[in-house]
Length: 146
Ligand SMILES: Nc1ncnc2c1ncn2[C@@H]1O[C@H](COP(=O)(O)OP(=O)(O)OP(=O)(O)O)[C@@H](O)[C@H]1O
Ligand SMILES: [Mg+2]
Image (cartoon, rainbow, N blue to C red; front, side, top):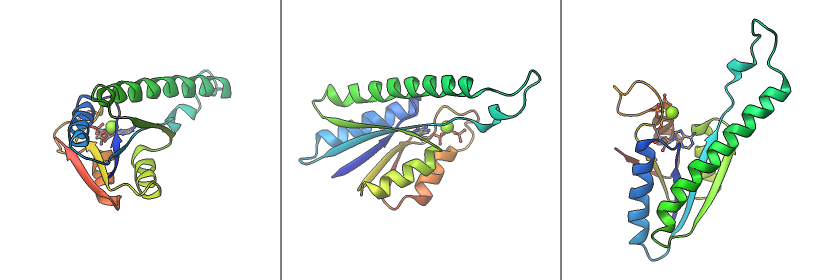
C-alpha cells in the first residue's frame, strides 16, 4: 500500500502522522511518503512604501521557507523511524492542495492522510482549505484525522 502523508507541522498534522505510522505498522507491505508544500505569498511582491521587494529578499524568504519545510518533514519522519518504518520525504514549492493532489495522482497513492485543520486561524469549521480541497479533488482515498 502506498500512503501519502501531508504535514504542515501543526498539532493536527502531527496527529495525522502518528495515525499513519500506527496504520503502517500493521501493514505487511507499505511505502510511505511525507509531503510538505511551501509557498511564497505573492502579496509580498506588491509595492511597499519603501520600494519593491527585491529578488534577493525573495530568494532569502524562499530559503527560509525551504529550511523550515525540511525541519517539518524531519520531525514527521522521526515518528515513523521510531517504529522502524522508512519514509520518503518530498518538499515541494507551490500551493499545498494543488501540489498534494498532483503528487497523489502522479505517485498512484492508495491513501492520502491529512489533518482536519492546520496552522491557519479560524477553527470554527471542521476542515481547513487544504484538507477540504484535497478531500474533494484527490482521486485517492483520503483519511482526515480529527
Ligand atoms: N503546506 C502544507 N503542506 C503539506 N500539508 C499541508 C500543508 N498545509 C496543510 N497541510 C495539511 O492539511 C491539513 C489541514 O490544514 P489546512 O491548511 O487545511 O487547515 P488550516 O491551516 O487550519 O486552514 P487554512 O490554511 O485554510 O487557513 C494539515 O493538518 C496538514 O495535514
Ligand atoms: Mg493551512
